[in-house]
Amino acid sequence: MKSFNDLIEEVQKPGRCHHCGGCVTFCSAINYGALKVDSEGKPVYSDIEKCIECGICYMICPEITDLDEEIKRQAAWEAPVGRTIELSIVRSKDQGVRSRATDGRAVTGLLVHLLEKGRINGAIVSRMDESGRHPWLATTKKDIIEAAGTHFDHSHGVAEFGDIYSTFSPSIWALSAMLKKGMTRVAFVGTPCQINTIRKMQVLGIVPADSIELCLGLFCSGNYTFTMDEFRQIEKKYNFKYDDVEKINIKDDFQFLLSNGKTKHVPLPDLEFIKRDACKLCDDFSAEYADISFGGLGAEQGWTTVITRTPLGRAILAYALEESLESFPYKENPKCITLAKDKILMTSRLKKKHAAQHLID
Image (cartoon, rainbow, N blue to C red; front, side, top):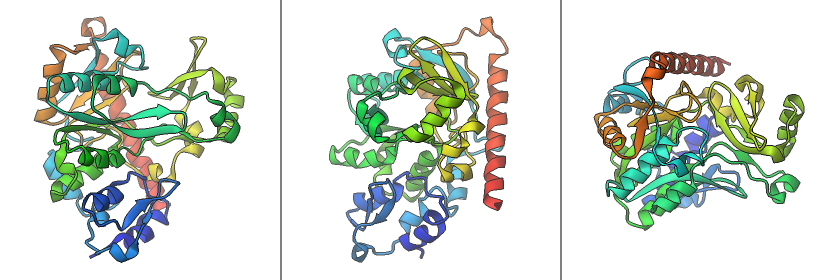
């Protein structure tokens, strides 16, 4: 049976660790206490003597393929980009919610709907504060709305000390808060690698994933982490200032929305130098194992592309569309769904191709 030592050798040392936190979360939930997360977000031994070498931390890692066939069967996965029951373009009906977002804020609208209807009693999301992006267990409508949107922090601390701004949040860490509060019906919002880990936990039937009611996946081109020195390079090349950035968005490219109403478009390849190395090995763009996947790609500004992948996801989205969400007026652009499918398929294929190339290298 392989153990955390094998994860260090096979995943961490080659730079493949996603910092998803799944290994540490399970070890803490089961009260082994052998692992912890260090100051850089990397899983490490807390007390090696407490490790019983159960091998579960190894099996649930998104970079380990031991359970891939099991989660594919569980998700009824289909080539080339996972099971797709339906693709739609939607947005929240709540103008206040939409004003905080760059896309249609469909995830926020859906979570608020599920919470108010009692379908879930909490949601694991991420929110931004002056020190960066962090996982958060939201238990009220106010909590969920406060987490909406992708905003830059303009505190002097970030500017002066070069603190990191990231588009990624280690959301699995928030499972520990769910356990402490005794929640049993929680929606999890995360990136493809995080959804992968949750699904592996569910296949094994281990805590704390048994309390996850719904997995909402986010389209993901990778985790982009900026230090101020790195951001200065982008400022110089594209002629804008950090202090003018109000929001960011990722569609076909990386978009910086400025305070003057303009948007600076940066091609994703130009940001490859700040993408985490592990992300270059990931081949899942559209969260292929989620119940529902969300992203801006393929949708007009102010709308969200949504893929329902499971019967549960389809039923929940249909219910929300009756009250909290609204569909894009397809008559205005009859080809929008076809165009969105084509973009998602093309982007997914490119990500799989690049991941395969990096694995060879």
